[in-house]
Image (tube, rainbow, N blue to C red):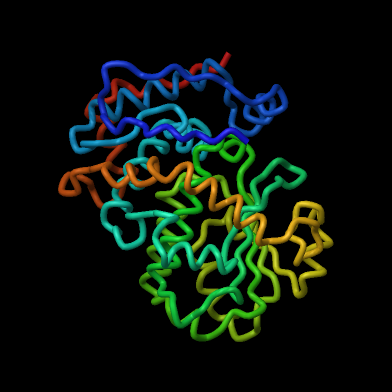
Length: 327
C-alpha cells in the first residue's frame, strides 16, 4: 500500500491547488459511482466548491485543502456540499476545543505507543470481502493502571487520522470490531456520560468516516445498560450496523478468517499487524503533527454547524452552492 507522507499545506486560500490523480482501479470507480454517485465530473465540482467555500470563510484561518483531505468529507456526505462543509467546520471545531483528545497524535509518545504495543487497537492488514478496512479493538489488552479516557481517545483518533486519507477506505468504508469479553466496570467508569455524548457527536458529525458496521464480541451482561445508552446516542444508520456476537467463534464464522489475527483464527500474529501499523504511523508522523496547526476562529462558529452553512448559502457567500451536475 502506498502511503501519503507529504506534509500538506494548511493555507486556507492557496494560489494554486495540486492536481488530483485517481490511483484506484475501475472496480472502485464503479463502487464510488453506485454508492457515492462520484465520477470525475462530480468530484472536480465538489473539490472546487469546497475550496471556494473555505477561501471565503473568514473564520477558517488554517486548513488543509488538498484533494485527499477534502474527499474525506465529500465522500462521507455523498457529495452534499453543504453537509460536507458543515462537517469540515465541525471537524476543525472539535479538534480545537478538545485538544486533550486530538493534539500530539504521535506514535513516539510513550503513552500512546504503550497502548498500541499492548494490542488494544489495530487495523487489520487485509480488507474484508467488501473492500472495507477492518479495525480490531480488544478491551482485555489494556493496562488499566496506566490509561485514562483522554489517552484512549487520543489513540482512537490517531488510528482515525492515519487511515483517513486512504481512498479505498473513503469509498468502501470501515468496520469496527470490538472484543468486549474482558470489558470491566473500571474501564467503563473511565468515561463520563458527558464524554460519551461528546465522542458520539464527534464521530457522527465531526469525523469524516464511512462506518459500515460495528461488531461487538462477548459483551458482558453488566454492560447492557451502557450499550443501551451508547446506542441511543447514535444515528439510525449506525444503530442498524451494530452486530452482537456471543463468542469469538461466532464472530470469526461471519468474517473471512484469513484477514483476522492468528489469535482469532487467522494466520498473521497480532504482533506483526501492530508492527506494520506502527511503521505506517511513523511514516505519517510529521503529517499528523502538522494537523495541530489548523485553526478556526471559534467565536465565529455557531453552535450548530449545518445552520452556519445554511446562513452562508442564504447570504450568497458561496454563490448558490451550485447543484452538482449529474450527466
